[in-house]
Length: 430
Image (tube, rainbow, N blue to C red):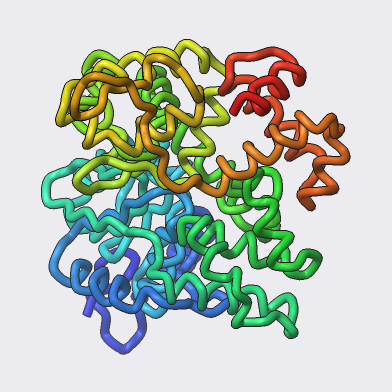
């Protein structure tokens, strides 16, 4: 047995060989971090993930939990280390000062490394006696590291989490509410989004919550006061990842927000130089999801689309329309969902007209089911055409005035128009 502080031999069952070592260890814990401890709220689901992470920790010195914003990386790690001895949770803003210092053997937890990746990587390489468990939107990329990608909750787990948090604030919440599964899906089954939305049942019905999710970034802002800033709102969680991107990556993310049908290699390279390489980088940074095509969680897409509206959205839209319209077959078939979405942005646009099988007539692209957001924007456009004010539209749709004002701005941008009269004219033609 050796002293937990200085490594000297112990003669009894104590953890430290002297009072001085005990005091030094206490001061270090107070300065650098806190021991992992159970949370007051319940840990819902994730049993398979918890078991998988535990196995990785037993086999590898460095494990990094990655995943999209709000997916629950920090919460999973807290649960994994809650009852482990010799665990130190380090404030990553102090990593720079720890790189050259001494480190006590044990498990070091680095939560939220994406802003200080280089310092964290240097720390774990300089102290080979340390076992490290990190959370980050992307791996540390150091030798011996095992990355564990965390994905959104399973549907039944998402519903359980929402109900658990909702019942904590309203004991009369109806666990069998019809809209529950719909709300969970629209929130991408992200634990942070679900918890923030569940806190709203104190003042809103589930129907009212669902109606406000089109403007989710202004309503999902009620996280616990003692939580980190990026855990108190959905916008802050995604913005934390967005801010560490290069300007080229940000521009690509904004462009990809107009492709809800997913991103193929051919399409990515067609819309921008080195598009596929940039898309893979965004995937590595947990902002695009893996699959046959790279896709974007709806919350990330809405964030990126809002950012697009502040930049050259019309130019980006027009470039995408040109690319989609000129794709050869069978590429157009593979891009059908993206073409349908583009056709809704600009109904009747000649670039989105294709010949039929006989090649003797032109026909419009057949549209599939509308998304919930598209349905609401079309309803807003129709109500504008009826001559209703924004306040009347908000009352009719049971949403806030600010939501409707945002919808009208989005319609103007998507349609390339400047006035409500032009929106009304478009709605009448459509």
